Image (cartoon, rainbow, N blue to C red; front, side):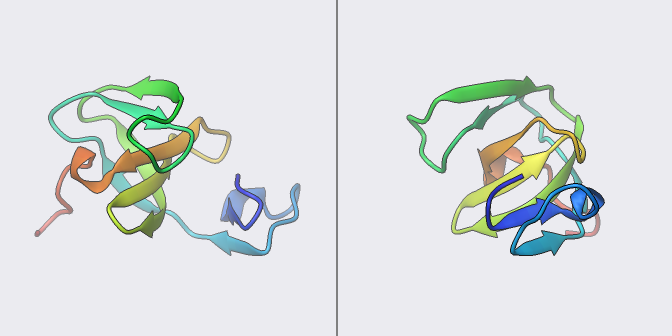
Length: 88
């Protein structure tokens, strides 16, 4: 959850300016480390394994805010860390 945006599943428990219905995606061929901010040198969070399903919540430039699910963990990865969408 961010102050401005939260997973729709959290709407009954947390107040946010906007709620989003996530899009299902997967981590690409390599593991990805969640970043706490949209910077390559940001503090690292959880490591997600290659192919792991994630929920895409927001895109800002070349960064995606993703989560394992409503309860997290959540963080930022470069868009290139995600597998291509089906049919792409």
